[in-house]
Image (cartoon, rainbow, N blue to C red; front, side):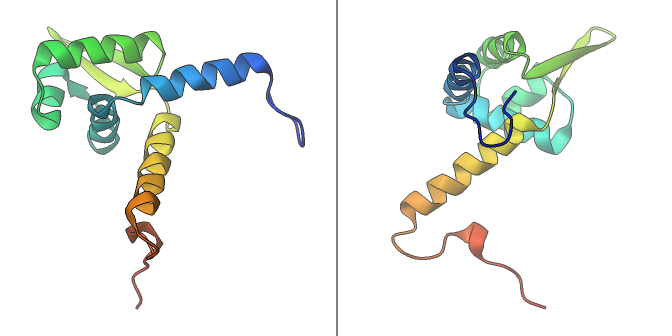
Length: 117
């Protein structure tokens, strides 16, 4: 773990790069966002939401499960997927905010706008 003022160990930097690489796929980003909204979903439900075939979504989920980003729960014959913790969502949302800055062309991106009473 990182202590105040110290750089993370090389091991954590390498693992962080793997996590970012795993999240560099648009389908996986969509899966994270879908699971953020619904908490638990089956492969078929996720496939419908992200607009991909169930077999492809299943492959993405397998990689995410190996990385301990998602976990499963059996309900009868269905397997339901959920995010292991909130960190994947945080990374994805921060990446989206960075993308908004990249295309803002000098203007305030949408996440900087606040609703006024």
